Image (cartoon, rainbow, N blue to C red):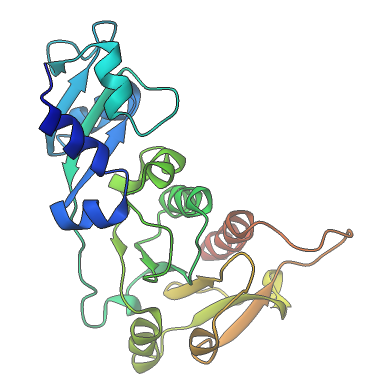
Length: 243
């Protein structure tokens, strides 16, 4: 049985300020928690209702208790708590392999999907500027479909990080409607691909560090593409050229 203090603590993790203060985040859903356990991901606490397959591996809670601690309007049958870790960008790291950089992408669904794309195309890392949606929010974790635990995600001031790329002459590709068609790219083994925010595009400080702007040729009349869709198309072209 959960105490009032337990419930208050778990509920508080809905907000970023409390996640940061406690250094903890929540994962909900039997499937993703089972995957984390299978991969020996360090979970500090696991709670499950009697109908969950995780009974025996978790602290039993009633459906009413799960409803109180869940971060969703419709509670899942299992909830777990993990510890927040934030790796630092190593010197010269951006010169090795492919990096997806998110410049103030604030929609949690987009951030989670972009993590899945980086995972799908085996990018070496993702950079998230501090103004991006919080990696450890439930919406981001759910949209990532488990990729949040497989992708190395770093949250530095983005302009400072991209200055490191410039120092090592690493190409920085900025997705922009005024860029060159992505199909004309030369093969790249090491590069940073930058996706801007949904409404504003690339910020001025980041734009100044882009070495080449690229776009996806438009054949219809749509105003723009979703940030995650655009990233997937660019990533696919880069990987295709490497073969």
